[in-house]
Amino acid sequence: MGYFAGMQDNRTGYKYSLNCKGRLVTMQQPLIMGIINITPDSFHAQSRKQSQEEVLATAEQYLEEGATILDMGGQSTRPGSKDVGANTETERVVELIGIVAQRFPEAIISVDTYHASVAQTAVEAGASIVNDISGGLLDSAMITTVAQLGVPYICTHLQGTPTNMQENPSYENVVAEVFKSLAQRLEACVLAGINDVVIDVGFGFGKTIAHNYELLRELAYFQLLNHPILVGVSRKGMIYKPLNITAAEALNGTTALHTIALLNGANMLRVHDVKAAKEAIELVQLYFGE
Image 1 (tube, helix red, strand yellow):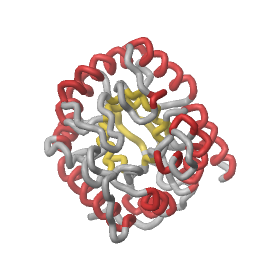
Image 2 (cartoon, rainbow, N blue to C red):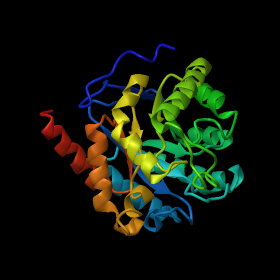
Image 3 (cartoon, rainbow, N blue to C red):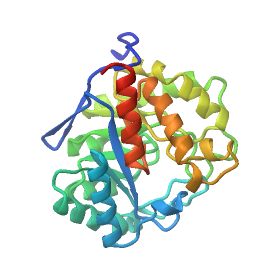
């Protein structure tokens, strides 16, 4: 398939770039994606934004603290969440994407959705990346839609659906199976004509805590797919459950795992706490003498 070009140095991996509607975003250093949840039920309560004022204030803060990408979504994908439907998702997020894009033209906006119709209208409103937690498996029109839109695509591994994914996650070899699945989805993306694909192993999306940590330990292996790697572990259950704390208390643990991910080749971090992530990136770069 042309993906297996050999393992890269964990410290830097490849130097990638994304063409976001004609704006070239380079990854000479890891990028930060700030999470803006326009939902009433996302797992980290403090990340929920309802009003235009809250969304704009969060966007401004994230950009000032060092985020390159603002990831805006109108559908919670926490374990056990129900699909609210494309219409509700569109009503929640698309107009606000347009407002944020107008207020902060320097921002790169990604839309967090697994519905092709939401991706379409969000990109028309101002988004320039599609972030799909299902890798195109929850909406068969997603891959072709993104190809037609001509924007980068974040392709995530998911076992099951958000509603049932944590009921009984099962793998014989989680690293090998996630790798194979992502390779297959990448092939579908390339064949459809998507030029820029970012991969995400899907921490917490149909994985036990043990699965998550095995994927984190072996993250560098996914560099063999020759695409930038996004890591989304911020304040997730793999942090707060073993520590017997809450998501609200999980910043320190998040920073610890971000540091491990960066050492193992992560090119992007999807986070609730931009300032802390930026500091982790800067210190890891100093560690490597970059």
